[in-house]
Length: 430
Ligand code: UD1
Image 1 (cartoon, protein in one colour):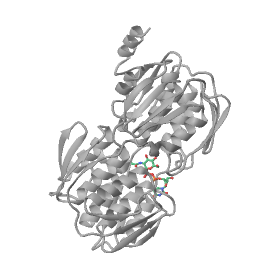
Image 2 (cartoon, rainbow, N blue to C red):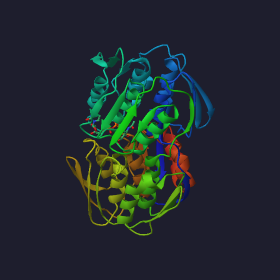
Image 3 (cartoon, rainbow, N blue to C red):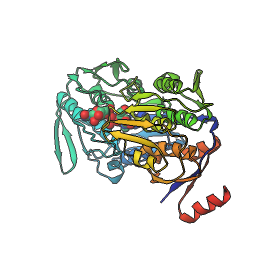
Image 4 (cartoon, rainbow, N blue to C red):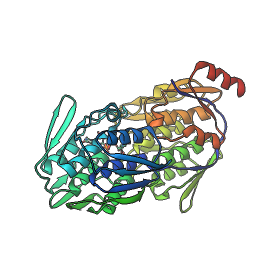
């Protein structure tokens, strides 16, 4: 089993190029199914969740051509099945986007109930409520969601809570429904806006993405397009927190600084310097971090996908910090692992009370999910001595070449498979 072995204690210094947004790419690839014409996509991250979705698209008859390390051409003129049931798709949460895309174009789809990271109860009732409002009949049987309709008709849909997935899914299906749809209490995340921009470039008529009311005028047909995916807000944020935690100096390049404002604001409260330019943000941490309080919220609030990373950094800050998770209830599972590295954190329900320690010490820990896995890597990079992070398959779902990028910033990290490789690493870096 692959794992990261890390010798901690070095500040990370340098520049890192951020890739395309995984969560935007998942929605955009699914939406590419909605036309028979060719779609070219650029700035696609090469991570396992994306590759799983591409495999699922190929299995139902889509043609995928990799035109570069981060670009694909997709042609979905010959979709021959509306029933997607393969291991590749069961693993990823975003499989639900195939439902909205196929329902929009073909008015029917059968997709497994979604998998994904184990970070709490993750219902999809709001997605289904939206599809039903558009006139689809939805059945759940044998672990599959079966959606079917004669015709989709625009509707006024109020989302009871802010959901990124439901907003995007309803937006996709409604783009090819008859008449107008209004989504109220819509999510405003950058990837909602990016997916709307992509659909509009295919000929859809979506207005208001990025606000809490989205208006969609259904069109009969969507066409081919060329599109570049936005930079990944969470990958960028993860490196920003790595700079803070290791007392380093990292410039994250190829980013949209506006998307990082909630993270920058917290880093400034923690005593870091944050310098923004057009497409880059530099984070400099010269002394011990200060405590602060954080509550995760829908965009433009502080992202839940950045909660474990800031908790790890606050675990090293002076004073008591409080982190409140308001999106996913089981998102503190990694705290037990962090405790093994010397953190002093008490979790009570959706709140973590953090008493900052001077330093972490190296240990063997296991990544419980994608973002917590990245946070444990940050902890290991700060820790005294050697650490091993196991179950890195979770991390590789959403971070491309993370160990390569970290090495370029001066980290001592290697991906290894066997115990003997860990021993070799320790000898080499004694
Ligand atoms: C997406 C992201 C994930 C991120 C999350 C919140 C993708 C593939 N994943 O997940 O990385 O952590 O947004 O920013 O883009 N909810 C319901 N019913 C529903 C749907 C959601 O009650 O039908 C609740 C969820 O339990 C959660 C909240 O709404 O408490 C937000 O979830 P949502 O925004 O839908 O997250 P995802 O789209 O699954």
